[in-house]
Length: 515
Image (tube, rainbow, N blue to C red; front, top):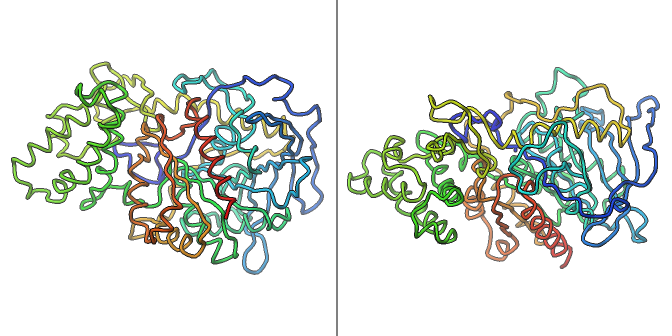
């Protein structure tokens, strides 16, 4: 999903967010949902050949039956001298038996963020033909170890899928363990994933396929950078970039002594969350759209001025700002005053429902929990992670090893801490320039950004603000779409939003295939 997983008192500390598992839905008949009665192939690799687990399956999506082959294996990424620098683990799903030219079918490369997250969340949460079984509302924790069910909202109806685990996640490892650092940086990561995509297209004879990238959370940074890197380095031109709850710039996320922008972009999401928990005044509570619009107007109007002036803000204006922030957040005026007008996500999560002894989730603020600690101004737990975090490793390991027949003694790193990650020293990491260049030089590249109003990790106005500052002509801006959802960072954990996400991305891919 920035080392957000720790989630200290500031949501902006560290690297970015990962993304998570799924919503429960298994209405299709069992015969259509289960893989074909075929043993997974457990292939013992020959010398210098990678391990491989492969099988075939059948699924039904949007009324269409799809036969597919799934392969779990590794590919090398090569140094300029042609020698391998790392092995990248991935799981690919390719439609078979449909009668069309496979090389012309779209392929989408998917990854999560972190940095340090494997692709398990998009794989078994959002886009793959199987998903972790969760309650439809995405609010209640499943009993470990969890189970997989058919995913009626898989993207296999419109594209083949390749789920990538970047180096040091999943089973992906460098050739030389002591040189892992060469992959743990913004540009280094983009370079490595770009080399993997080139290699996969080459080995699988898919250069003629329309190409998409789908990245979640920090995957927005990776995806925006890749859009330009692939063009410049490998002459690979994308048809579309899909960013799920992501970002393009860290300055919208990480406040500093003279950077108050993160408080501005967070405010509309705080208002939406306060509305969900019925903490707003009656006129705002009656209309969420109106409430969000008022919050957005204040965030980029008088609130911006108040933060910019700092200690020079006149007392009357300060008092007015305090009153307005209390109205828009559901907090008390004294709390706003104590925070010096700067309400971060962790403080809000701790205080909004303190009268009920509950704290809010960061990734989905609809979710609540009792951390039993009132001594701090920030939560001691992340309630949303209790909903989904207990089943990811078990379901992924069981799926790869038992269903796909991939044999590996190494641990599958669902989330690998990467505190040594290089976030481009002495400045905020940003790919705004990369994406602007990619769209300017590829007039067919389209972008879809999905945002959740209960997401306090990468709130909607985070990426909307970045889009406003892309250096693009008006024509290119028309190729960028924003899709909104009621739930949070992992909107696919909520059945209603997962269904909408599938429709939105399906329509986007189909549109991106037209001139």
